[in-house]
Structures are given as C-alpha cells and as structure tokens.
Amino acid sequence: MRSAACGPLPGLQGSFQSHGTVLASASVTDKPKQRLLFFSRVQRGSTFISNADTETHTSAVDMIESKKKEHEARRLLVVRQATPGCGGPLGPIELRKLVPFEPSAASDLLGWVGLEAARYRAAPASEINLSPLTHHTVVLITRPPEELDLRYEGVTRHVAPPAGSILVVPAGSPARWRWSGPKDSLHIYLEPELVARVAAEAFGLDPARMTLPPLDGLDLPHLRAALSAVDAELTTGGAGGPLAAESLANVLAVHLIRHVAAPRRPARGSDGALPRGRLRAVLEYIEEHLDASPTLEQMAAVARLSPYHFARQFKRATGLPPHQYVIMRRVERAKQLLQGGGDFSLAQVAAHAGFSDQSQFSHHFKRLVGVTPGRFRTPARIA
Image 1 (tube, rainbow, N blue to C red):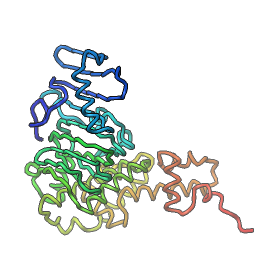
Image 2: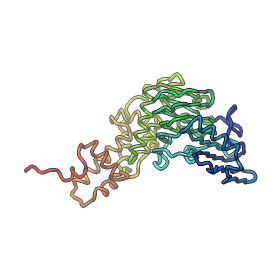
Image 3: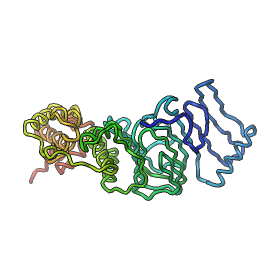
Image 4: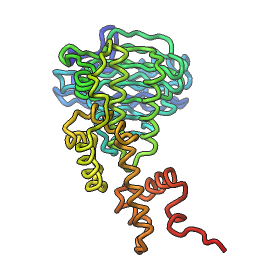
C-alpha cells in the first residue's frame, strides 16, 4: 500500500492547509450582498469561521467573481481528506459521503462483496483533491467533460479522454480531478486483497510482488464490457446482486492483471468441469440456502476450491455462472409455488423463492419463463 504525507499532491494547492477533514464550497450569484460560507474544522484548536459578509472579505469576492467571468457555469468544489498519518486512507463509502454531489446510483446498501460502485451523471464542474483510498479505483468515462485536468501517481492529463476510456488509480494513490462542463462516469472500487488473490490463484503470481500500476486512457473492450455489466447490476439490483458483484469483481481483476502482467495458463485440470461429487454437494447447498443469498465464497468453500476456479469449473459443469444458476433455481421454486394451488400472494411467492422483492422476482421470472408470474398462475383458457 502506498502512503502519502499530510497535505495536497506535490504541485497542487488545497483550499485549506490545516490537518483534518476539510470541506469547502464557494458559489457566486449576481447579488452583490451574497454571503460567502466557509466551513473549516481543524484537529488542533477546533476553529470555525462562518457567515462572513462580503464587505469584510472583498478580496475573496473579487477572486471568485474573476473565476465566474472565466467559467460562467462553473462551481468550485474542493474535497480534501486526511492522508495516512492524519486519519488513514478513505474507504469508498466514506469518500462518497464527502463528494458534494450525489451519484445517480450507488452500491452502498446492496451488500456487495469484493467491490463497490457509484455512477455519476451530469456531475457539475468541480475540483476535487483526494487523499489515498483503500481500494483500487477503476473509472469508466461515459461522457467526457469539456475540459479536464487530472493528476495521480505517474499520470498527468490535461485533455479529456474519449467516451469509453478507462482510468485506474491504484489504492494508496492521491489524486486531483478538475473539470468544466458536466461529466458522466462510472466509478468502481476493487478490494486490493481480491486482486492479489486472483493474481496468485489464476496467474501464479506472487501477491507480494504484484502491484497494480496507474493506468490512463485504456481502450480494452473486454474490460469495458465487464464494467458495463457492473453498471447494469447497479441498475437492476435485487436478488443475487452480492453474488453477481463478487463474480464481476473477479472478472475485473482478471482483465486488469492480463493487461499489466504476462498471464500464465492455469493447470489443465483447473479448466475442467467440477467433479460430480463436489457438484452434487454444491447443488444441495444452493437448494438449502436459496432464501439466504449464498455467496460465491460460500459455494466455493463447499467445493473446496478458490472462488476463481470454482466459478470456472461450475460453469463448465452446468453451463451457467453460479449467480445465474441461483436465479434459475429461484424461478423454478417460484413456478412450483405458483402451480401448487396455495393461496400465496406474489409478494409471498417472491419471498419464499428467495427474491428480495416482488419487482426483481417479476423481472427474472418473465426473463426466464416468458410470461409474468400472474399470467403463469392463471393461464388463459382455451374457449
């Protein structure tokens, strides 16, 4: 894990030089009496300054008015967090709470394993200074801003990348983002431990020597497709989400490692189908835990394999990835309940089959069966 001393990136100026958490926001309107609000929390001294009239801060107003003339639609938003030694690196959820605009979707409450994600649409023109994060950050730019200045370890960019470009900021690396014009992007945060595990198990690499370097402007279709799959899961959510996210986290790790290191083919036996005895044990475990959202880790443990090799061998044995198989079995259970003549409501059928809510139940049921659950239970009679 890389470390950084307290303070902004070399050559970058933060809005405040005090240690601790700092959030500053300044905006300008055409009203001459508009007040400026400055909030500062300093670990030593607990000093607060607020509601300063423009008459007593003429120089600050002049500076901001000048910025307004240069960028009429621009807001300046600066977020800075204590670096290692001043509170430790940030986690993805902590970071999102500090960013002064909301994502259109986030995985905070989805219980995902191995990664977190947030999608931002029309993010306003901003400047954000970030201290190191606990996770690797993979960013998919879906709509570039008009202008972009970006700096993180080994990367300096002064031009916005094209749509579809991928950026990677390794865990432990501070970064500065500054852009004008709205920006759309998907931010995925991968656990370094998961990446290291995949490097060891799938590529035979030494985790102690395997480091994910900073990457900029990648155009990798397979990696982009995996990122888009995470985005789709973020939108869909629901039953099987944590398992799907965990599987996608492994896929993302594989694509990243393939890009930065010469891969070695796994042993021939690793690519075969899951042995019949282990497959039977896993299938029984799934049936017994359909309503408990079995994770990839749990199923792999039953098979006595790593999650990576288990997912590969399970798909070869069944034709489906583990999370898709779980969804299929839940739909089959729901069909049995609907045909059983019981007086269950659709919401009750969804719960008994292991779906988190009726909406997700209906979505997957119609996708796999071709009709809605209600239509399936009361088929049209031939006159």
